[in-house]
Image (cartoon, rainbow, N blue to C red; front, side, top):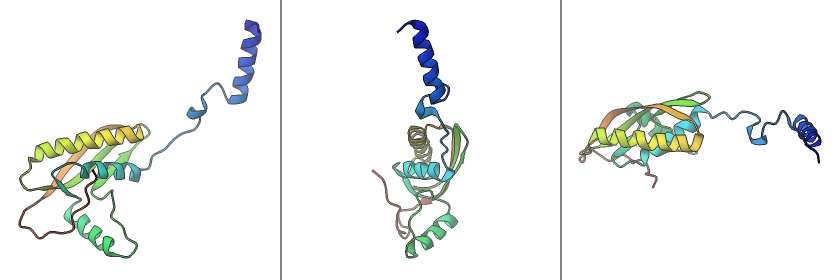
Length: 150
């Protein structure tokens, strides 16, 4: 095939396939806020020193919901995400175990959340704000701890 014939064939193929764009790049993928919130919530719970997620009020409502038949634990409890087309920002509310260095736990939470969200979604995480709402004391009555993912 001559160069001009090959160019004509390539041009015809492009017109059939839509301007030479690879099939995997045609269309748009959107990721819901809730998806990012679940990923971040699970990643935060993996960090040693995180006792639970959510403020006291959110945990109380979650505990009630957990006891309702058909209700399930929310992996996104304590996480709020704002998702754009290429970036996301996250706010997390956590309860830490007594005795752990809070700054170290917060840093580990940020690192784990950023790694998980960026790896799974391809979004750039621009910020992860961690609010420590409470500390779980050793002598406090045990509420059902949230399961750790390992």
